[in-house]
Amino acid sequence: MDELRVSPIMTSDTSPSPYIVSASSVYNTSWYPAWKAFDGGFSPTDSHWVSNVFPSWLMLDYGRKQRVDKYKIQVNSDILKSPKNWTFEGSNDSFVKDIDILDTRTNIAWKSSEIKIFEVLSPKEYRYYRIKVTANNGDTYLYIVELSMYINISNKFLISSGDGKTHSIQITSGKSEVPKMTSPTSPSGEVTTSNTYTPDGHYRAFDNDDTTFWQTNSPSINQWIQYKFVKKTVISSFALLISHLPYAPNNFKLQGSDDGIVFTNLGEEFSVTDWVVKTRRVFETKNKTPYLYYRILTLSTNSGNVIRIDSIELISPRVYEIKEIPSQTEQDFIKYGMDRVTILDLNEEIVLKSFVDSNQTTLGSGKVFSQKINTSKIPIKKVSIT
Ligand SMILES: [Ca+2]
Ligand SMILES: [Ca+2]
Image (cartoon, rainbow, N blue to C red; front, side, top):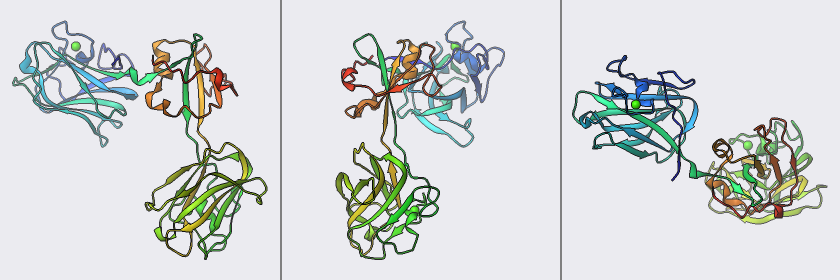
């Protein structure tokens, strides 16, 4: 797997900016300061950090969040001074309260001047990383010649379209399009229902509060609650949250309408009997048509004689943006390359194409334009993993 070094080559504990290297203990700050473990080399012979205290840690502050997939340690020729037991840790508050153990090693033996690679099993982004050594292989002193950190760049890839151009696809998740309602008509739109236990309380299905709800007085079949948008809006999925299982709907569907009279079924009729209390559940309809009204029609309950729904979200579609990448430099690759997981759902229609101009202007900075594209002209299914 290809790798890219993300830790810097340091020339002092604070150079280059914004990186900062520090250690809990340094044996001799003139000869063996912490940054010597980040100076990129083995020689001169004092090119290592030395401590004689256990445990002892050596830390790099990236000055920003950085993912690290693996790290390397190089030891000195005197292997008794090499680390034997340690943890590799990440933090976003300089290890005050936020301490994540990313890797734990015990009884590690070394050959002279050896470099070993260690994988981080669940990489996340952290600003601070440190190695905390609790024991070495027998000497009074601990030597670390080099500590360096890497990301696996095969997790990133771009798409070559065959005409010499390179594209990256970015997916923006849909979001709930209904504002946090404070009455049936405030701040905008209108919530109405077929039946409500509390007059005017039905809007509480849309109040962003999981402890309040819409509940019918009775009956429990063929009841609905709807939201009228201010303008036609595409809603492709919805989320429900339930707190009282007997009153949960077990057959229901999403419907759309422009006049509030004639409704169109969107997607399938959902059937759910395994609700989990207070756990948001999302239902996909793949609707692409804008409507003014959206209605949740409940056909039956689990067992109770009324319907109760605590929270409803009406969610806009994911937006796919194809970015045309000006070149395939390493920086473009890191900046625009997609995570491998991104590609999983490419059968959906691509609705936007955005260009990154040659001045490296990024999306949202004003020089980007979007247009409808003919997806057949963008052979995105011919993926070449760079
Ligand atoms: Ca060094
Ligand atoms: Ca609520």
